[in-house]
Length: 86
Image (cartoon, rainbow, N blue to C red; front, side, top):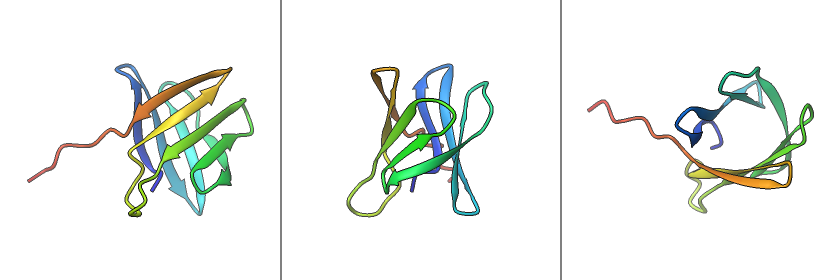
């Protein structure tokens, strides 16, 4: 539910993928970070002081967005949806 691309600005996105039960984060232009779970919707980095809270719909569908909490700031990022190939 938390994998995908979440766009903070036109030039910066957070890309999440899951490998072997681990959630990985790759910010634009940066290395990949393995995240730890604090709860089903909240993850944190062990490398930098950052917390990510996903907006998870009650119906079990994928996250619609997230809030990045870092350095005393909170930044929202919506999920980036790919156009349908129909």
